[in-house]
Image: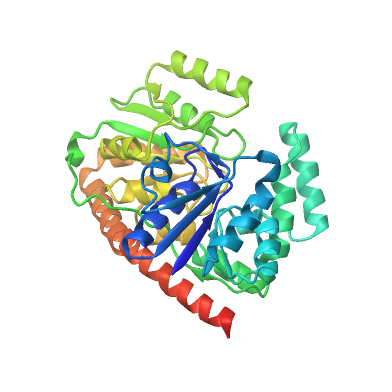
Length: 375
């Protein structure tokens, strides 16, 4: 099968970019021809796109003003059996191109579908709300609005959670649920009792990820003999970043580790006792899977995809900062309960998120989509 990945930006360690690379490599190992089109590529972050053309052939657009024509030309030359993207911002363009060139397009959701504007009234409300709250125009909402208009014209949509699939179904939009996949560690190198870190992983975005809340949690946990460590890429909000760095220095019990690679994040979580998530909204955080696969319970402020944390007992979902602090102290006091959650988390990850299992589901979906498209 000739599979073409389309992701205009590959210059940050985002969940969509990381998953795309993991899937591309795995599909190549299965004997499929893999092509990866992008414009902005950071080869230090994704060396696979430069070092192994026999595994993943990079089709890089070199002109910012002509990337659209580059993509059209590459699709004509490659003649892929299917095009796959997680790029919501440009989905409208990809949909038009693939329909004009008669190529099936699969779109993998990378956001909270319930937060998207599905009509102009919702779009106007989001623009008004976010412009007043954050002081800048929410361009994501405009892209999101146009993306939702593409849904009926896609060859297939892949949801990251069952709740996303059910929501889309309520709008008469068909999708299939496939969880994110990861190469899971074969064993745990650090004993649970030796872990002395409470971790936070994510980009330092004020409005969505809210790392300042992690600092607030650490401030109220200075009596604990644990180190609070957070990592993630910086944003353009300079005043907010300055606030985070200044507060980090003042607190003393928290450390910013910078932007880490995937393997470095894995090493951090391997040493962590608990992972905290303070995001306002997310689809299905890769960090949850990375933590669970290492037996690390997750305590989340708002996000609980498919209610997995609550129903499977893989940590706790709390509604406020006080609740998170209480659960941190609870797990520190109750070693048996902690070990039980830790074992559940690792077993659940092995059963549901192993990359080989996930790759099988994607390939089956691709084959069926191609057959349906041709019929």
